[in-house]
Amino acid sequence: MQQPGSRPAVAPFLRSAAAYAWRLLVVGGAVYALFAVLGRFHEIGVAVFLGLVITALLRPVANLVARVLPRGPAVAVTLIGGIVLVLGVLALVGEAVAGQRTTLVREFRDGVDRIERWLERPPFRLDPHALSDLQERIGQFLSSHRSTLISDAVSGAHHVVAVLTTLALALFSSVFFIHSGDRQWAWFREQLPASVRGRVTIGGQAAWRTFTGYTHGIVLVAATNAILVGIALWALGVPLAVPLALLEFLAAFVPLIGSPVALAVAAVVALAAKGPLVAGIVIALIVVIGQIEGHLLHPLVMSWAVRLHPLVVAITVVAGSIAAGIVGAVVAVPLVSVAWSVFTALRAARRGPVEGPAGGPSAGPSAGPSGPARKPPEA
Image (cartoon, rainbow, N blue to C red; front, side):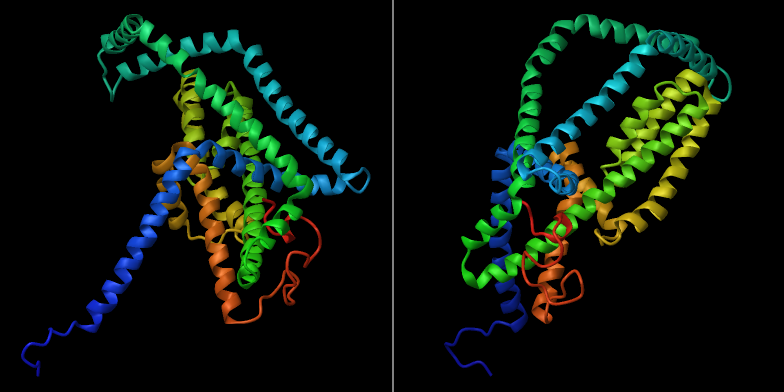
């Protein structure tokens, strides 16, 4: 029974809830501040992320070339070869578009007329003047807002400069990551207190292993999707098969969502150029590619690197796109995968001895064969 003048007792549940609540508020404030700082310098974050992607892709090649050449020239040869490969693909796409320009203009004009006639028939029964009025209104809008559109395009030139600067910084970072990333990581660990170096090493190894696995896996999935789409569109006679295949390759870096969007663009092109029948086949192709990607490629190629439920992947992609647009949609899944991998590795370390890649106790950064999949982060 409560004594007179004494304070009322607080239920243990409320005491525990209050203790957790203020700690969660502190953590939430710290996370918000971190994202606010990153938002101010997001170009640097994107550049470092791209540099790590380039490192994950090209470091194995540089290691092979380094068996013949010294490390510096091997890195230079690898990066120059990668740049030449990318520029060659872009030149191939530009040549394909330029070579089909006259045919494409004629096919799209005929295709728009064919779509209009198709919409005028049952079951749509669209007013014949509706589309022509829409075209006139679009033309009037562009004419009346021409100066505004031109000024927006000119003012948007600084975005192009920002993109080029980000790419240059990413390439510059990748040079050092590929050449001496392990030494940079060792220097970073030496700056930390000795009591946390072991946990940082474990987390770093898990993070880099997951990141390289995800990068290699998503590139393989994207390349497979692009090849399948390119062959199918070429067989159907859809114009711009090569550019649409490249679009599918880039869109595949946004898991679960990117490929359907890219194939929807291909379906619109097929509808305008070849009619509803071919467009329907392309739509069926969306379903087939989605099934191959979701039930074959991702489980076989990426399950060992990314252990996330498809629902978590979908929520992560949507949350990333809301927070940072297309860039957020691309980087969200690898970041969440790396965070989960680090958490799992540290939890396993607290429970008992850490198993290395070969099944024995991990001996730190030098354990296991050389290569990015066995090394800690390169930054």
